[in-house]
Image (cartoon, rainbow over all chains, first blue to last red; front, top):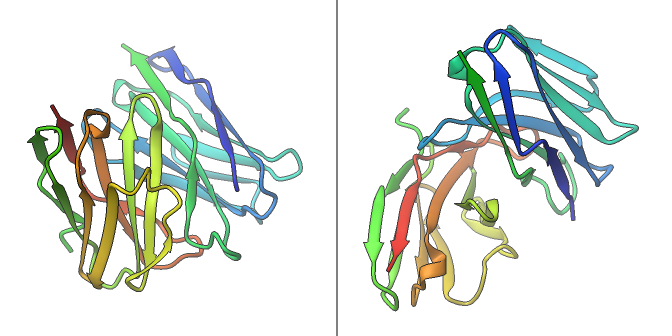
Length: 115
Length: 114
């Protein structure tokens, strides 16, 4: 099955700096890559996603990039703010095959933004 | 829509007791997922359903765990008998479609087994 690796497990940045979280996947059939944010004591919520026919997607201060050849994708947060502090999960899924509908999650990155 | 609803929000029980967690997916969603989250193991998929039919239960830890979805608006996850290592936050999620479908998570049930 699919295996998603996520790095780093913890990340501390100063407010205003950028943060980058990287993930790799193993199954070339994966073509959907969402990112979820989970604040302390809350549920994971989708913040951005990217499909394999797109190399980059941006939404205000967050962006995702995808390199299908290398099987890795990244989350970029610019101008970080204290409210960005949370655990971020990457995931991978496929739109066909026996695992249709299923997402494989990374282990998460605890991002702390210091004011 | 109220979103995915889970009950109870917190459950404290003693080892050996039966525990039943409940989930109501978003109306119209045809996929339902049960996840378990712990510090040690992260977010694990236990089982998921499509149109009330279990598709993949390979994540269910052992026979003590069982899940049902008797209709499109209700699912249960049962642990019998419960053990301290089952202590975790259990999330239910639902999605409208399989391909590129956003999974919406419920608030979770925090289970503590003493």
